Length: 239
Image (spheres, rainbow, N blue to C red):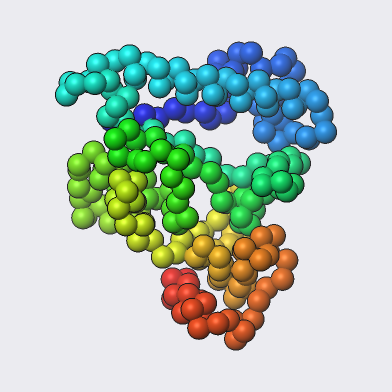
């Protein structure tokens, strides 16, 4: 089983979040200023509603008996993941440091999001992975978890990381490719390929995202060590 809990903010925003503070519009809720207390109160209210919705879904699954015994929750994969970073007007705290949101940008604060997977009997609780995961990986991963094969003629780009979830080998993904067009403006579109710490843009800019997360200073490929030169070549070929 796969549990999907939608938390989007579409046209029916009022139906999804009836308790949000009056006068705070859907768009402003996610793009407003962190200095405005009304926005902060609304964000906190929505966060509570989201957490309650997830808890409610889990409780319903736990109460429903499964065909093979136990509850439906015992045989369900639940994935919680962000779609992008927070807006730049919001500053969060991570590991004791301030992190300014990067939504709409290709830097890590815009594209590197948290993911939590709950899979009873398969995942060891409390585990942490450093593997690269792309959203295209979810189709083959969930199919793998359900014991299904993805048809070869679908030619999917994703790579299953179900084996790692089961406690096996790490995900085989060596890099992530991204083509991004903000707000449909083709003139500002960009593409890059990245490993866990090197990011190469199609225009030739190369960054070490661990040392320079805001991508302020491009690095010279000629200065890379042997391992990073091999990674650079792989990224260049991917582009």
